[in-house]
Image 1 (cartoon, rainbow, N blue to C red):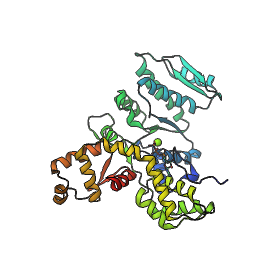
Image 2: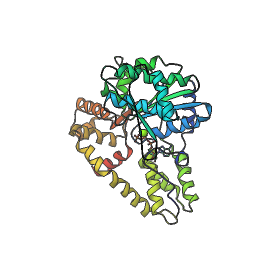
Image 3: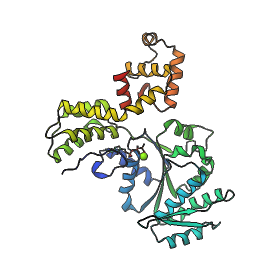
Image 4: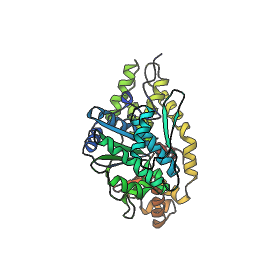
Length: 369
Ligand SMILES: Nc1ncnc2c1ncn2[C@@H]1O[C@H](COP(=O)(O)OP(=O)(O)OP(=O)(O)O)[C@@H](O)[C@H]1O
Ligand SMILES: [Mg+2]
């Protein structure tokens, strides 16, 4: 049986990775230059895959990284332990040696617990008290300075916006500041509005402390050769017109484009047809439908009107009187609605054009409401 050559879900590696060649080059350059970076993009845009691939390509240049996914972290203690465990595991040494190392660098000598999972992989945690928590965090974070003497060290915080409620921003910033030129930090996340507040607000600790690194949708030409090749290699055919239709809907958004590839390939015996394309589209939409209707139900009537005007006007010149009259909305109200939609990470603005963060949501609303 031939395995479906497309994949969607978690982070991907080489064979599923399409393009981003220029961006990878730039990211590696920035990492080599020791910059601290902020990378934000919508959910499922390929952030994690992208950064992991760049780090993997730097493996041979004596670069080591520590990767922390902060998605479900809700307390300071969890944060410190996640960090501690990530560093300890990256040492790739026997647990005895790891414990010995930390006993030598963490002055407070807290109890270090080691647990083994069923295949014998150790995980490490610290017994923390309220009083020693911040000092321990500092010592844990500083412990990587020891490795930074031998290799280049990168610390990646994935879903960094999740620390907002931990009251750790100032502490983290002050420690990280002391690491400049020794350790580089990459902050990643999907909630643009929260990250913007953290990095663009003068009163916040991380204000202007990073380079904003942009990743964009993958271009149609790259998808075209990627998708066609995957079909060809598995003895199937897809006409370019279907790739045009896919990209017209997904706008090159990686997660959805892979889904189209996956579903169309599954349904195709020899050559993709109109019928197959529409069946695939229906499957993908039905998978997301519950979420989209919930999102739609959760916004105010004025926000719905603003969304319809964005769709009608392709994101530009939204204060057109004809449309304001059509939807019975005033200039001030649409302004407020647009602000709220940006805050909710539904809509974003690029120069003078508003657009949807999720292209399939846009398609769904356009077709159904
Ligand atoms: N460069 C790429 N080429 C092809 N497909 C990609 C690429 N990057 C991401 N994808 C697709 O998008 C999916 C999600 O990728 P990834 O987990 O890296 O995104 P993310 O932005 O980190 O998502 P999340 O918001 O869930 O953390 C992958 O499973 C894959 O289908
Ligand atoms: Mg991710």
